[in-house]
Image 1: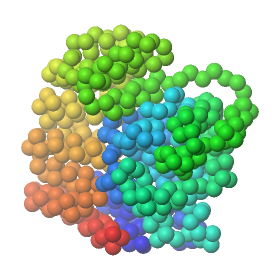
Image 2: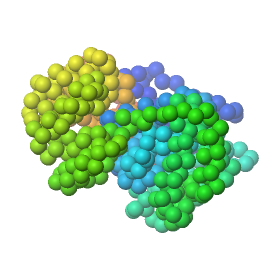
Image 3: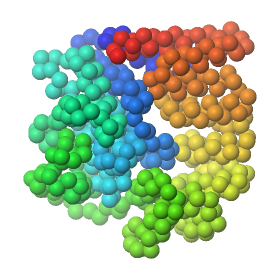
Image 4: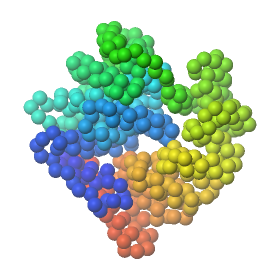
Length: 468
C-alpha cells in the first residue's frame, strides 16, 4: 500500500514538470491522513476512468467544475484539490470519494429542474467530504490505508454502471456508501449553509428531495443507487424546508447556463436525429421557462442532422440576445464546421478566446475546428499549450494525439497517447507509446525526459499490479 501511495505522487505531476516532484510523508496527524486520502482517491479515479462511461463534453464538464468550485470555495472543505468527473449515465447519482473526487451522473443534470436543486446535491456531497464521514467510519480506532483502498475499489462497481454490476457487489458497495442518520443530517445542514454562502437558493435541497421522492415513491429502497444510499423521507424534506426558512426571503433567478447544459444532456440521451428533432420541436412549442433551452437543443439536433440552414436561423436571435454567451458561440461554430465553413468557425472561436483567454470549451472547440479544417500544426500548438494546465483531461490527450499524428508530429503523438493511456489505467500501453517516442527522440534532453516519464509509469504499473 505504501508503494501505491508513493507512485501516485508521480501520477498527478504534469509531464512537463515530472522531474521536480516530491513524495509526501505519511506519518501520524491529520495532514498526513488527508494527503494519504488524496493519493488513494487518484488511484480510484484511474480505475474508474477505465471502467466507467465518461461524458466527453467540454461545455458540461466546465459548467459542473465551475459550480463545484463555487461551492467548495465557500464550504468547510480544507483540501480543495478536487477532481470532477461527469459520468455518461441517465440514472440519478452523485458521489464524493475521499481525496477530493466528485462524480456526477449526467442523469442528475437532466432530472434536476433548477441550478439550485442540482447544486444542493453537490453541496451535500462536499459536506460529506469536509466532515470526512466516509473516512471516519472506517475504523473507530484509527485509519487503515489498505481497508480504505479496498472500499474505494468496491465503489467502482456502483459508479461505473449500476445496470451491469453483480447484485452482491452492488449491495456491498452501496452499504459502504450509506451514511448514518446523523451524518446525513449534518451533510444536509452544512449543504444548505453552503448554498447560501455561494449565493444559491437554500430551498433547492427540499425541492430536489421532492424530485427524488417522485422518482422513487418508496424512498429509494428499491430504486437508484443514490436513493438507496440517501433515502428520502417526509421528515427529511420538512427539515430541509425548515432550515431554508431560517434565511431571509430572497428572489433567486435560475441559471441560464444550467438550463442549457441540461438541454445538452437531454439531447445526448436521444441518439436518433429525427426523434430528437421532433421531441425538442414539441418542447419548444409548449413555450414557458423551458422554451429557450428546448430551442437550443433543437439547434444542436438540427446541426447533428446536417440541417444547418434551419439551425442557423433558430440560433440567430439567441446570439443577438446574448452575443457574448460562450455556449451560443460554440453552437454557431459547430454549425459552421458542419457546413464545412472552417475559416468562419476558426475566426469566431479565435475572437471568443481573445475575450476569454484559456477558456476550456472554446479552446477545445477551436482545436476541433483547426483539426476539421486540416490546420493540424495550429491545432497541435494550441492544444499542446492547453494540456499543461489540464494534465488530467484524458479526452484532451486523445484529441491531441490524433491531431499530432495528422501534423506529422509522431514524437508528440506517442507522448500524448501515453498520457491518455496512463490516465485510463492502461500502463503497459502507455509504456509502449513512450518506447516508440524514445526511438524518435532527436536529442539527449528529450530522451531523458521520456525515460523519466517511463520510469514513473513502470512504477505505477508494478504497484497497481500488486493490488489486482
